[in-house]
Image (cartoon, rainbow, N blue to C red; front, side, top):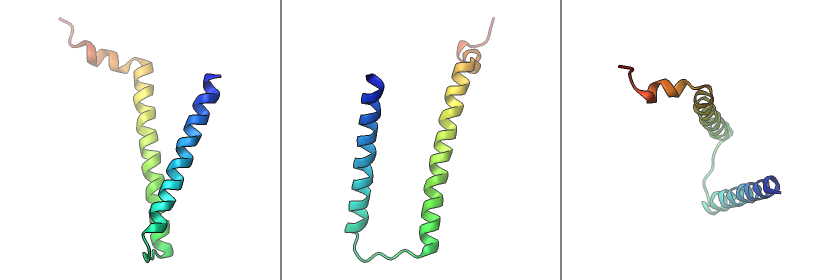
Length: 77
């Protein structure tokens, strides 16, 4: 039940952000972006998402494997 609720809330947030982004995009008016600009914008967004996801993966991976424990414990005397 909790999983279904979480998926529903995240789906609703995704829909709201996409609709909001489209509204802002369409309200800009006479802004023309060439095909090369659209490709660059799309690739920039994808690379940013992949980089953020990769860094979050490394944070969780490092935490679960115990690599952070030695650093936070401090030097042994």
